[in-house]
Amino acid sequence: MTLKEIAAELNKFSSVLIFCHTRPDGDTLGSATALKIALEKQGKRADIACESAVPEKFSFVPGVGSVVNNVKELSFRYDAHVAVDCSVEGMMGDLYHYFVKNKNTFNIDHHISNSNYAKYNYVENRAACCEIIYGLLKAVDLEIDADVATCLMLGVCTDTGYFIHSNVTADTLYISSELFKKGGRLQEIGKKLFKTQKKARALLYADVMNRIRFYLDDKLAVISINKSDLEKFGATSDMTEGFIDYPISIEGVEVAVSILENKENCYKISFRSSGTVDVNQIASTFGGGGHILASGCMINGFFEDVKDKIIRTVSLYL
Ligand SMILES: [Mn+2]
Image (cartoon, rainbow, N blue to C red):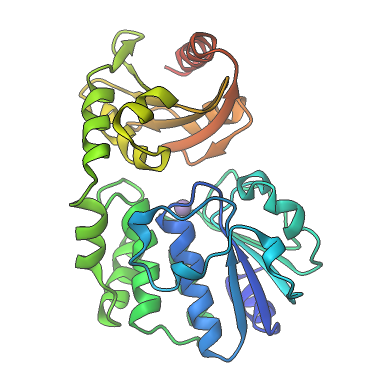
């Protein structure tokens, strides 16, 4: 289906529940809040569900205060369920069981590894899911006011590392320009998310980067963050977003990996590639996925075993 057809289909419904992925980032939150605000302006009912709490740094984002963590609080029956920025159903966490209960499910995403888990799927390889939501709102003439523009710009800014990643296209800049014209608050996003951080994050960052390990002739750089590191500085796991940009910036490093302890013997792995290695393929060997240059997965086991598995797998692709 084309985006216009998906938009027309979604436009038929008068109440929509929007699903974000767990450990929400700027793109899933920006996509959801933009869609919610635009639908509400049309007199429709729209709510947002996300299994994880929204990190405090996003509290400035319009509409983010209304995100519900427990769908049991929502007794309302919605006409449609829409997942944004979720490449696989598992990214919604346990909320997926609620998502599939609806017969009109939509999956709007920009990850090439998307598993097309909904009734209506729209997947396009773009820098951010927010770019797709922009096209969707335009396709059915939903109003893009300054708040909607700010939400959409948020996802574009965060998924492109403030326009520096190689996923930026002419379209990314064109859409950003249109959002800026509509009042999208680019500088506020930059200041709140790219030029400000908590003391706990800064100290954790210094500690983690001091322990970077190099393997495979320095082509692989690995950072690791476990629960006790977080506790030491009073940091939370969402503060580690963006850490991996540092090891991948090192000359000669082709793949960077972040190993973040999720719970005992369960690690959230993030991969970045400097351009030659397809880390979507590497993550998919562990049941994950994402993009060619940025992907992720979960691996269970003892830390040393998990790390060895990663090193062995990456060595096959170098
Ligand atoms: Mn995204």
